[in-house]
Image (tube, rainbow, N blue to C red; front, side):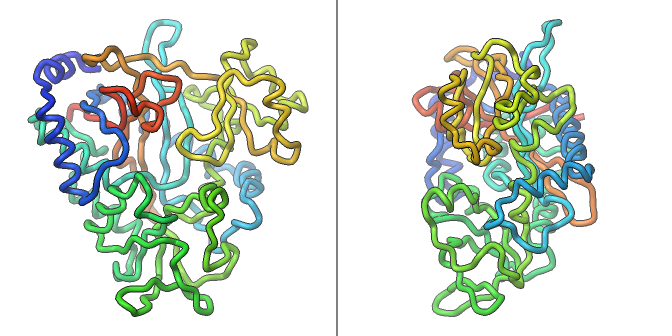
Length: 404
């Protein structure tokens, strides 16, 4: 988007440099990158990034600062996955924005969704640095927010993820982590923080304690960096060694309840210039909020509340498709105004859209901290890397911006 950087990058790009970038990522993570990495970073105006960072904080505060919302969102937590000991604030927040063109022709960020759940903090920091180093980009370009450097970035993540514990007693828990496309991110966290990556199904419960096995010994788990998505546990029929409702002697970095409290479920409750119109499916059937949506059904998006990577999303849903959702499940679906992203990234393969995710950490007793951005580039209906696998100059990318 910054013409000078964009033009210079495109003119100097070589396939050899791209191959070097991928090799650098393999080396630093120790594994193959299974999702598509874009050939290019994205160069954004600092002012635009700061607008999105500020909007993410304002949106989050609207929710967690509202007694009415907190009461409503408590009902969004399924009884079987209601975990005791919920923290007053989420430790992590991700807020996704698309860029649209307003009536005056100006680019404006619009909320896609937000989630109180950690994202790829580890991998994303390495990706941004790899872009700079491999392509020899200007030293004035930044990717950490608030003027922080790499040292401070990992200091903050250590504070939130490890806390005051011995890293040996802190685990990054996920469903079959070695099979996840986010494994490169897990590896970076483990290397940087000294924590263990464990399969949540292989934890051991004794009394009210959890343990993991290490060379034949049981190591107590005192804190869990939670990367488990309940939707996946249910969909895959994973048998866990504990019940989420158990009173376990363990701390959570990213308490599981927040995954449900702040999600697509939140959008109808928000009042902000960046937020598109949205209505719960059960409300729509009851005639509540129908006036919020555009008259043209093709301008609607229909999505389940609790799924990742774009699973279950439909554009322009028919009455039959909406009616097919069982009555008791309708509260778990959302009808939303469709956003048409503006193609803003000029590449040798044509103009490309960008969805920008702002990643935040929230240390206990302190303010919410914007950390880094993640960018997904695409040219189709969906922006996720899985939906752009057979194209070039699309996929996962990083947002770079000029320093002060």
